[in-house]
Image (tube, rainbow, N blue to C red; front, side):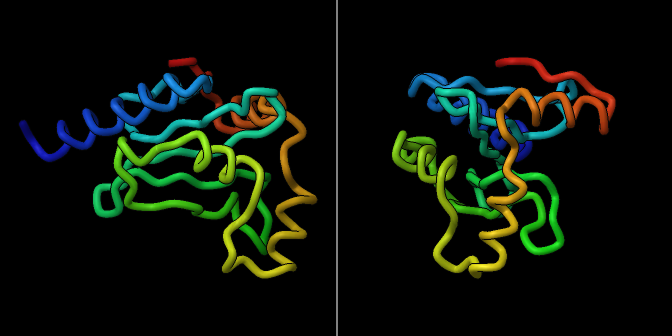
Length: 135
C-alpha cells in the first residue's frame, strides 16, 4: 500500500468513526482528490472541519466565514488518531475556540459564524461552484 493510499484509508476510518458518533459528514463532490470534510452539528446550527494532513495526521478545526483576524477558523486538535476521535472533541470544536486565540480573533469569529450548516453549504456551493455530498 502506498503512502497516499494509507492516508486515504486512515481518513475514511476517521469519517466512519465520526458518523458512528451520530454526526453527518459532508464533502465536496471532488472528495477523491482531497482528504477533508465538514461535520454538521446534531442540531444543524454549527459545523467544523476534519482533515487528514500528510504530516500532522487527523486534524479538527472550527469553521467560520473568512475574516482577516481569524481566517476561516482555528485548529483545535491535530495529530489525533481515529481511536482518539470523541464526541467531546467534536463538540468542543463545534462550540468553542482554542486557548491560544486572542479575544479579538474570537470576537471576529463569533461575529462571522455561519447561522447554520445550510448557510455554509449554500455559500460554498455558490462561491466554489461545486456540490456537497453526504458520506
